[in-house]
Amino acid sequence: MRRIGYSYDDLSRPFKVTSYDANFNITGLVQENQTFVERYVYTPFGDRTVLTGTFGSRSSTSYDWQLGHQGLRIDTESGTYYNRGRQRYHPGIGGFTQRDPLGSDYQDGMNLYQPYRGNPVVYTDSSGYCCGVTVPSEAFEWQERQRVLGLIAESGAQRAILYTKLVNLCPRTRTNWKSQCCDPDDCIKQAGRLADKIVGAVLLQRINSPQMGGTAGNVTGGNQCGDWQQYMQDASIAALEEFQAEGKSCFVVTSVDATEEYALWVNTYHNWIEISGPGGGPVVIDPWPTAGQTIVDSSHTQGWDRERRGPVTSPKWKPCKK
Image (cartoon, rainbow, N blue to C red; front, side, top):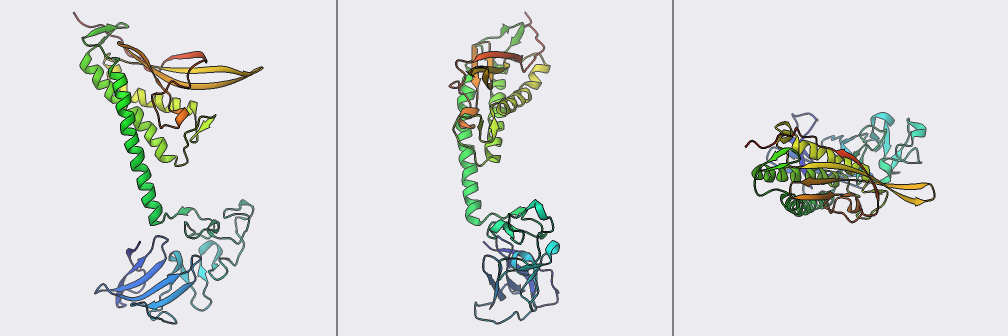
């Protein structure tokens, strides 16, 4: 992957811009007619070879170009790079010539001379202290894009399932339900809003947690069941806030905290939410067992001693006007 960026060198020289790769290695100098006048190739740890613009051999740079591996400034006499916090980085040995000034923090591993956590293809270190910036390769970027597109497609299917379940809770005519007035059109709109917010919250967690698995456990995909419950609560409140204020909410979202005796004096816990409407319910929302792959899921909510914390949503009930 090649990018073009303005050089920081003397702009009076016969080139205007530099090209650099995905790891910010300067790969060439380009003049005004958009042809390369000099090219550079590197070993993974930054040992530079200078070539002509047409990839011919060249013993040294003809332009006294001093920026190279990961954009660092090179000392052409010693072949080392200036790297701010530790001054000298030696590409020949693949390490710094000074110990990590952060000492016992071991930012780059147990070896205090090691750069980039031992992986210069993936990481950069512009400070000399730690490889704090991850540089994805072109292949990684493509894979990540495909992963996210796949999650979005899965979310569309989950949204359709949840929306259908919620619409089935809506009445066919205006109905007084729990001392509130629920209009069918309003109910369908609220079902769509709930589905959008809940599925969107799950999608966000899945995108931000690439290592999410699909196996139930105390922690799935980096989120405990209580975390998932909180995400679903927040999404539901945001979805129904407008309708609650007007006293037209057709759904009640209930938070469920449950316990189960695992062994003598030892309990396990599980958390989820349930949504009820005039047409019945509840619809069980529990993304935890599958780390968000399935949202409407009651498979892990059976056999618990339930302790309902009460409605998450608290509408101002208003009966239908006669």
